[in-house]
Image: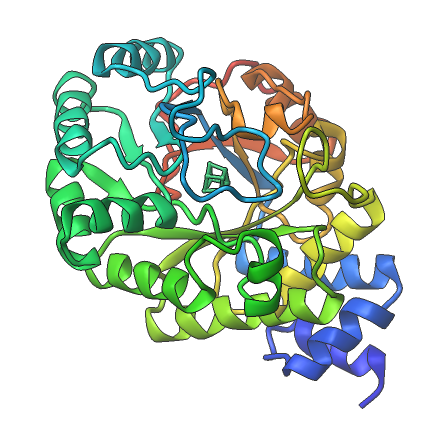
Length: 363
Ligand code: SF4
């Protein structure tokens, strides 16, 4: 089959084989890849709406026993630079975000073995009681596994306890590239790819919505990026709709043990487009503007993305690795509108929230 035929089939929603995915990713001209991804995005989400969520990330602790080589955020247990917020401090950050209209809170941090499960369940109960309009979309697979280990409980029991306390959904953080070879090179102490998938499977079985991410640009090959997409697509086939969105983002190699070159804009757009085409069963593709910046995030809207992610009012993990990008709601809305789209506020579950006023008026 010619490259053009494969592109046409993918644009129409046809399923790509692994080899076809690699072929499109490595051989298709950028604009043709982008045009096919944009066509597919428009099929899935006709119209000009581009969504975003008002959210914040609260990095409650930087103490972590996983020691990923690409992470500039963590500190060893016992480090004088280590910190853990009190519940009151976390709640103050939640209040700050809620006052600005946030509907989603990502409470995420290192895997700190000093914190028991009760620390999180009590915190989530307090957040739910005091800020009922805010959804707790929090923790990561690594943190959930760390808690299960500390408590000697199963992943299912741990997730169930977190859910009962108010955690509504599990973000896809910590996936990086779900291929053993890559995992061993960049985060050998982290859960293996099969373990990441199993925690996500358990969360989805409990009815928790989840997202999936891909951190690319470290040591993986192009084929391994497609392998990662294949792993996500397979789990999504099992639990239709379990992943609400896919969020590919690239690693920034500043202040980190792992060295390398930051992915280019060209590479970023190729990854977005091939992700949109390969993940035929994942509804939303998010423009993760935090590392490439808002201007590249805007261009991403023509390469398959239908969502601009969040305002990420506070965030440290990516910033400490050298990213200096920030955005106000007005800036997010402006780049969406300048690209010819219509900004719309959503919540964690992609429900549109028309009752929430935009920061800027529609012309
Ligand atoms: S990326 Fe997460 S799990 Fe890895 S060292 Fe940093 S805080 Fe720990």
